Each structure stands twice: as C-alpha cells, then as structure tokens.
Image (cartoon, rainbow, N blue to C red; front, top):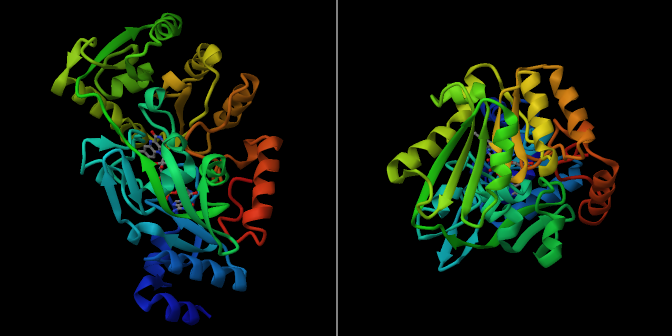
Amino acid sequence: MIATLKEKIGDENISQKEIDKISYSSDASRVRGIADSIVWPRTLNDVRTVISYAKRHRINVVPRGAGTGLAGGAVPQNSIVMDMGRMNRFAVKDDKAIVEPGAVLDDINSVSEFVLPVEPGSHSVCTVGGMIATNAAGMRALKYGKMIDWIDELHVIDGNGRLIKAKGEKIKDFCGLEGTTGVVVRARLKLAKLPQKRSTSIFSYDAITPLVEKFNSLKKENVLAMEFIDKYCSRLIGLGDSNHLLVEYEGDEGSIKDEESRKVWKARDGLYASISSKGYIIAEDPQIPLESIDKFLYWLQKNDVPTFGHIGIGVVHPHFKKDSKLVEEMFAVVKKLKGSVSGEHGIGLLKKPYVGQEFIDRVKALKAVYDPNNVLNGGKVI
Ligand SMILES: Cc1cc2nc3c(=O)[nH]c(=O)nc-3n(C[C@H](O)[C@H](O)[C@H](O)COP(=O)(O)OP(=O)(O)OC[C@H]3O[C@@H](n4cnc5c(N)ncnc54)[C@H](O)[C@@H]3O)c2cc1C
C-alpha cells in the first residue's frame, strides 16, 4: 500500500524501518505510541499528497517538529508521523520573517538583530511549526506574550487537503490546536529587537507570602521576565535554600549585569534537565489567575512538589515522579482556582481528561470544518 506514496514523494522521504518507527514512537513526554511509517515532506505538495493518501486509506497523520512537546502531542497511534524537519527554510527581512515549519527557533534568531522573542526552554531545537501548534510561550512571555501574538499569516493544509491562508481571527483555528485542524506549511512572523541592555535581580524568601507581595509590587513596564524558583529547584542550581524570584529588567535596574546576568538565565534554562535527572520526569504547566497564585504555590509547597516557572504570567511547572497520584489532586486544585490545565505545553494525550466542555465543543466544531474524517492527529486534545 505504502508503495504508491513512495512513488509520489520519493523513496528517500519515507521509511517503515523498525529503527525509525521506534525513534518516532515517542516525544519529550515519554509516552510511547506506535508509528506506522515516517514521512519527511519537502514541499507543500508533499504534505498534501500524504494527507490525501491518509484520508483515502483511513490512516492517522501526526505532524511533528522536534518532538520536544511535553504533553504527548506528537506521539503516534498507529499513525504516519510527518516530520517537518526537511521543510526548514526561512528568510528574515527587517522585522518580518517568512518561515517553513521545520525551521528551528535559534536558527531564525541567529541571523539578525530582529528576533522572534517567544523563547521556550527548548529554543535550541524546537521548531516554529511546533511552537505555532502549541501556542508556545516562555520566560519572556510577560513582555512578549505567546506565539499567537507574533503571527501575521499562516498557511496550512487541512484534513481535506485544502491550502488555507489564515490571517487575523482565523489564525486561532490553527494556532494552539496541536496539529488537529491543519498542518502548518508556512508562516509570516513579526520579529522584534531585544533591548541591548538587560540586567537581573534575584530576590530570596523563606516563605511564599513575601515573595508574592514582591512579585505584585514589581509588575512594571521595564520587566522582561519574572521566574519563580522554589527551594528544591533553587538548591539544584546553587541558589541556596530559599524560594527565589528572578527578575530580568530592560536596562540596568537589576544588580546583576552582562555576563553574570546571562549565567543566571542559563542556569534557569538548565532546570528541566536537572530536575528530570532526579526522577521528576512529569513537567506540568497549569496557568493560574494571578490573584490566586499564592494559594497554588502554598499547595505545591505543602505537598513537596518541586516547582519553577513563569510566575509573571501565572504559568508554573510543578514536577512529579512517574505515576504520582498528586497530579490528579493538583488538577482539582487548578480547577478550584479557576485556572487552566495547560498554559503553554498543550493538551496532547496527557491532559485530555482535564479539559472543559467548552474547549471540547470548540475543537469538535473546528474538526467538522477542517478535518471531518479525523485524519489529523486524531485522539489528541479531545
Ligand atoms: C526542556 C524543555 C523546555 C521547554 N520549555 C517550554 C517553554 O518554556 N514554553 C513552552 O511553551 N514550551 C516549552 N516546552 C515544550 C515544547 O518545547 C514546546 O511546546 C515547543 O514549541 C514544541 O516544538 P517542537 O518542534 O518540539 O514540536 P513537537 O513536540 O514536535 O510537536 C508539538 C505539537 O505540535 C504539533 N506540530 C508540530 N509541527 C506541526 C506543524 N508543522 N503543523 C501542525 N502541527 C504541528 C505536533 O503534532 C504536536 O501536537 C519545553 C520542552 C522541553 C523539553
């Protein structure tokens, strides 16, 4: 059966080798699935050909960037995995970029003083297609928002095989939908210059209350990033035995400057890796209304849940060991505090049980329009 697809997109762009199927059976969530085959489209037409083939043969297609997603969004379920990595061209001109989905964020940001300022911790490998599909955020989201704020225009191939050029409100039908409504094949992005002068301050607190009070008093125009790091995580990166608030300023208001400032943020960048090496391999990303963030941090501390994250936008990363019963309890607390289960990583497979009816209805309505045969990333999100 697959032979017909090989003929159309080229033998070298498709594999059913066992080694490839195993490599593509998971993503950074560590959930394991089953890949039927892997395709590497090079053009928009290849993407369309694969989707039409999948539709005809009733096979699921899972778009994939770098596989750094933490919710299982790129995990196949007897699916064709569509690795977008060979569609990775991009061009930057002043404060605009035209990108293919497989372009890597750090590559785009290395060619000009204008950059895409949305910076997930996975910036050295994550692709712009994955960032669009998850509506990624990151440490400077307080100042620069999420991926959706930087998209001028999106080109996607939907589950019917149609090319859709989305602008304005229509971008929301695809951005953050985790590849369930369309495969991003091209985007026009806005870029910005990061301030030349940046500095950092670190505030230490034994208790949560004064830290949150400080945080509330700091919501200023010149703050680029605000990160919470609890006692456990602070010890891991050599900050000592307190809770910490890391603040990055535009300008030189912070007491730590230049190279020393960069070192602080590099250490913060390394936290995912250090914490997972201690067995805390489940990284959650609830978003909590800022007025309730203190209650949430208390709950996490009371239950010894190691946590760090973007307190400036209310998205923090509580970490759990495999099969921890506390995950369910935490989501009950998130619901009680009127938070959302995912502030940036997406729903994927792992957070499906916790999404609300309103979201389910919205995705169903979009699927009916863009993917009525459920070819694209079926079984994800809802
Ligand atoms: C160490 C670490 C730190 C991280 N820090 C952050 C952070 O600070 N902020 C944040 O938001 N996230 C973070 N993440 C999560 C993840 O890196 C981001 O969601 C990232 O944007 C995913 O990009 P990717 O290319 O790896 O996508 P993948 O993991 O390959 O895919 C993610 C989702 O997008 C879909 N997809 C991929 N490409 C396309 C396409 N072309 N069209 C349609 N759908 C597509 C996939 O099907 C899947 O559902 C982190 C992950 C790690 C491992």
